[in-house]
Length: 219
Image (cartoon, rainbow, N blue to C red; front, side, top):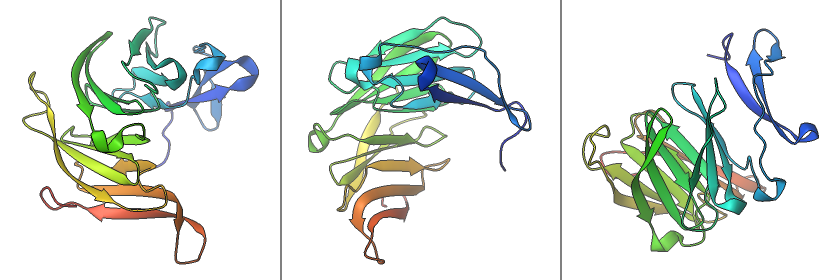
């Protein structure tokens, strides 16, 4: 597939203490549209995600427990603050559902333009202090939470667009070697990639990526 003309990417520009926007136009050109800057002690930019409609960029600032949501075409930042430490260490955005990981919880929000409202807080005792990565399927039916050598799967209990949707625990898989440090899933959540960067692989080197297929609620 590759990059198409007009596609954008947000890049940390340390020399200017902020983020630059680049537009692909064979070759990449700096669009100079805007630059996001926050307190340098806040670990701003630890995670970055562009919304499905390409209209918003989300930047995590886990040292301040915040996520900054900003429209690409304007400068009206919406700030989301989590109740516990590490909020914004991992972010995913699919459709109008925004997922934000903190050290111990995952916060789900419904986005309607510049209005972002709380949808659900997922608390997992097994991941307390150890959430490292989250990934939601593009159809918003599956959410995977990685950390503490495990990946927990949650599924929507009704149509994701429903006002009363919630995500319920559907099982977990475990491993070793920082298993779950990074998780990524596909469009409908039936394929899951799990990174284990300190696992010993068949070549006696550190690092493995595991691929799982889901059948029903079973990985």
